[in-house]
Image (cartoon, rainbow, N blue to C red; front, side, top):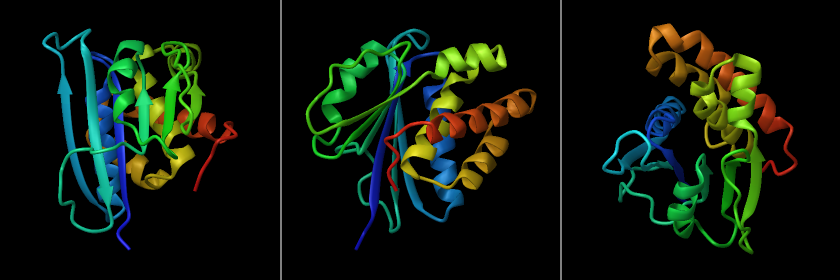
Length: 185
């Protein structure tokens, strides 16, 4: 039976949402999966709502866009409001930065708060890695890809000057993900 997982990451331009989607896609590819990814952002590249979509399958991807997301990773309230309607109502999961998003819970969805931005500032003195912390936590919780594949994708894609910082961030994300009671396999 074909296994397909559809993930949507959303936030505002400048948070690294598109980068996080690219890294997730590369990690799935590293795991030997078929992958499709798309992204969009508002007219204002910085500050406008943006999203990245990643479709992961064990067989060729027939349609490259997310039809109904299994997982929504939300890092900004406005983007959450814009994209929550595209998540699977039964069994869908919302992983959100609880300092920037206050979701109104919808019956049938699982909600997992992650203090990504606060942790990035407190532990790494850099808000710019909150996206990678969120991605690490999401991978730990959902097992969309393996940890090794995600680390490898970060090392391959992230600019050399930020690579060490982002690798620390992904490990912090894994740790935060392990601390949540909503893990699914």
